[in-house]
Image (cartoon, rainbow, N blue to C red; front, side):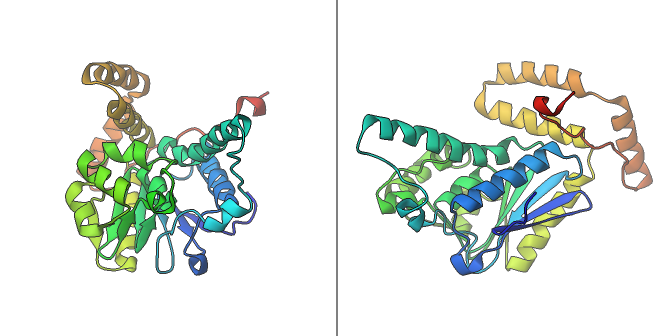
Length: 280
């Protein structure tokens, strides 16, 4: 991977930590941000070392969302013709796919949010498995305040994460959702008093996940995502097929033995992935 300019990435003890590192620009999102995030997620998905991912940030705010100057430069939305408006669909599909990579990553993703999580940043963390926040954090569907509809995930994922009435209030008004209310409604699961304790808490959770059998964690993520979008009957059938595909007597035996001996378990990593075009 080329040198990152919008992020830093480390992998320690099977935990990947991706940090937004442009605090002087409030970690706003522009085309380079999207390119780097897409590349990082693709590499983590194909690799086998990382078993959990923490996404955190720097500076005053987690992220102020889309860099507004982008719309006057690198991204041009042509609303003057049917053909130009049709191209908006393809552009948005490409942008949406990057955040969907977070959701579809083979490993769990924990978002550690401090300060403002605004606009596109909320779209991004909505795709994570777990969200932690500082007590001074807030969330905002900013798009309505600048005359547009949120279009890269918030309106699609948040109805599965919080009460619909509250989401409607935020989406129609652009009001801020404070961290305490986000905890009450289930959007975040823990609050921390400082950025330092937030990141430490997120990394502690990721390290705990990394001690579990990676294929069982993978299977759990598959089952939870499927059940979110399907009925109970279909989800139970999918669970049967999934369990039949990945069941391991060795993993279960090793997990039980490790618990009894109060030691870390020894589990194989997920197999590295290659594109079909890379085979042969």
